[in-house]
Image (cartoon, rainbow, N blue to C red; front, side, top):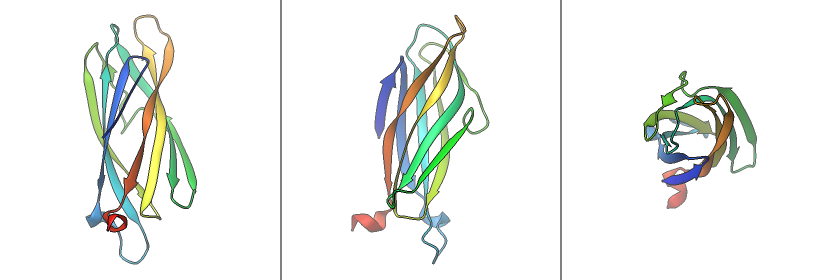
Length: 128
């Protein structure tokens, strides 16, 4: 598990290889990741958008930006947590992701970014 706290927002990431989703013969490696976001600030925040940098072991990079996470823009009160699961696929058995979330401070209307810790995904076949 990877954990990082920035701007009073704690982000934890756990990854899981999805063996059953890989298609034989096309070198596709599918991973799920579970992210838990905890608001340690004394004010309410809302997650507005995300930015991801996704890199495989061939150094191919994909940049992904969009509103919210998995179709939601959750509101977190002080000490509240929000958890979601998503996924990513790679043409290589190893990859990594890193990024950030943009939040709104609902108390004063300002915006800030919280960093997502870089996390690596490795298919079990490379660990043998």
